[in-house]
Length: 206
Image (cartoon, rainbow, N blue to C red; front, side):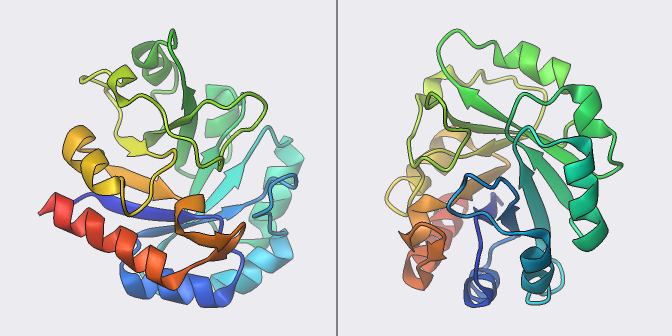
């Protein structure tokens, strides 16, 4: 069964709706330029709405070690997700399982990337958009994904209810990740879009 992560949660109602709909993991963005940014204090409030068995994922982009540790003092995160130029040593130092995001483009050796970040629990494959680390709503050419990646794949980048079924059937990723594809506006999730997305993943996995 392909797992589902919904990222960029900013409201309790969206946390509850995403969880009730069947999401396996919910992402909180600790990158201040993002329209989906939440402070550590706000994230701690949102976590109170997380039910059991739904993983909390914290997204960081080239944050200082102190910044990450300050968040971790206030917020119980199950998984860290790094979207910048963080080194393998940086990612591993916090003692929490981590995902490394990769902005895929022609010429990038994903096999070498997976070897370099071998301690990661998965690679999150996202679209490359110059100057923007993620959450762009852009997709990428799935044919750039080698069939023998040694790490689980979390597929991201421009997914929505209209495209995720084909993505799951084509790539068979460990998980899919969506943010803008289930929003009514940036940072505001749409319950019906989330439920339609989750339904399409379930249908494609069966």
